[in-house]
Image 1 (cartoon, helix red, strand yellow):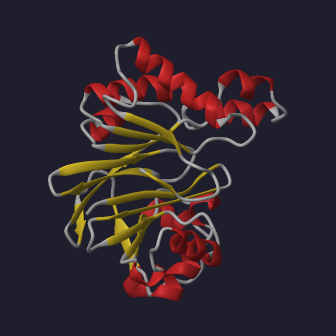
Image 2 (cartoon, rainbow, N blue to C red):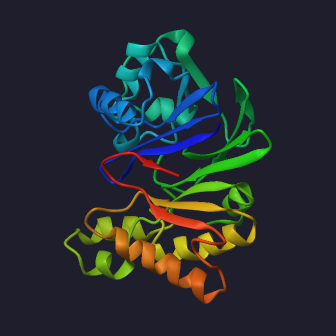
Length: 258
């Protein structure tokens, strides 16, 4: 049985769990070890059962608990060289340092993993596709702009955790300093609701059955706004949400199951 769960997803922290029933993977750990344990227990998963931790990039909302979790549970940590060089996650046992590269496929247990490059203001950030029993699952967040290469990588996925970070007008009219607004809106920032909606339509046309909108900004978005923008575009394009596919928003503070 394949399990795909957003443990938390948002500007304050991110962590995702995926399993084929035998191999259990944690993607990012933007929370303390104690909060991770609590989140996993909520969905009846023992932290001791996790086989590996994968990191998308070095920002603290993705790595806050990575070092302690690796040390506490003796977990190998898979990350790009740029992520390792830029992270402040503390000492990791030499045998648990696993360096990966963009577009280089590898396997953990029976799960195939393909990291792909993403445009974000980090040193060597990646998204991931997971290949399990002939099906594909994807995580695509922290993306400044949707590119042809990213779209092709996540195309055909059964389930996708897709960034829908901000409402453009909320961001422009909000309290953030102008340079921060420009960074978020720039090509190495985050995906807007508008771009997420267009990407969702592309994914559904490629065969995607389930989309979870994630990494929502607490200050510049609302779950109902993100959901409505994507729902409306899909509906206007002839997609019956709830029948042709499912659409939901990841909770920022607690687990959300696909």
